[in-house]
Image: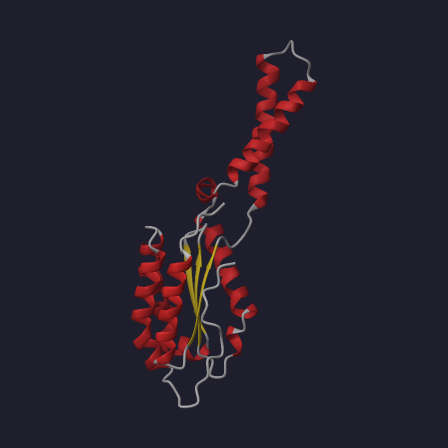
Length: 207
C-alpha cells in the first residue's frame, strides 16, 4: 500500500490554488496525485518464484531426510511471502529501475491527459500536473498553446523544483509553490478572455 502524500485538507488547498491560477489566465489546470502508475506485478512474480525455488532447494539440502513433498510447501509459503513483501511501497520502489519508473509515469500521464479531456479545451490551454506517489515522479504536460510558449525545458525546471518537495514528503508545499510560480507564466502564455469558461474540474484527481 502506498501512503498518500496529500491529505484531504491539502487537496482542498491545492484546488483553491488552481482556481486562483485559472482566474488570472485562460489556462485549464488539472492536478493529479495517484498512488502509482503501474502494478509491476511481473517483477513481484519473478521475485516470488526465485525465492520459492531457493527456499525449496535449501530445505532439501539442509534436511534431506524429510519428505520431499514438504519442500513444495516451503516453496509456496516463501514465495507467497516474497510476493507480498515485494508489494510494499518502500520495497517496490527499491526494486524499480529509474528507467522503468519514468516510462510508466510518462505513459500514465499521457493516458490521463487523453482520458480527462485535457486535449479538447477550446484554446489548447490545458496543463496536467501529475504526481505518481509510488515512483516519486512528476510530469507536467501542457497542451499546444502552453507548450509553444513554455517548451520542454521550461516544464522540466518546474518538475525539478517540485520533485525536491515530493521526495521530502512535502507534496502540498511543492504543489502550492509550483502553482504560484506557474501563475504568471500561464497568464502570459494564455491571457484570460472575457468569455472564458471553466472547462475542466478543479478537484485534485486522487484515484
